[in-house]
Image 1 (cartoon, rainbow, N blue to C red):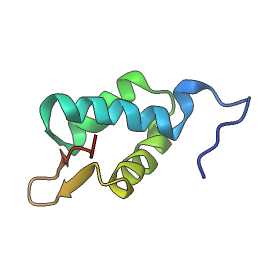
Image 2 (image 1 turned 90 degrees about the horizontal axis):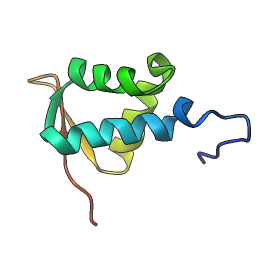
Image 3 (image 1 turned 30 degrees about the vertical axis):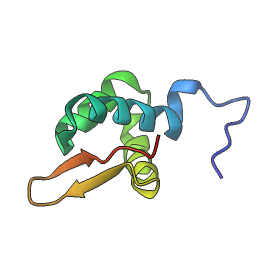
Length: 80
């Protein structure tokens, strides 16, 4: 379970990094790995160790898919 504590800074959580990545993906639909990581690094503290778990969370939720042929992530959309 992803539960923040009272000591968690809002910008230094997996949920914040996933939100930034999702917003960037919604704008362009497909983003190369480097551009997506750059977008997260601009807005999120500690993006070095939050980027991979954020992408894993989005993948588990069925919102993104990795395309290895082009080294990019594609936004699949949600059920909403």
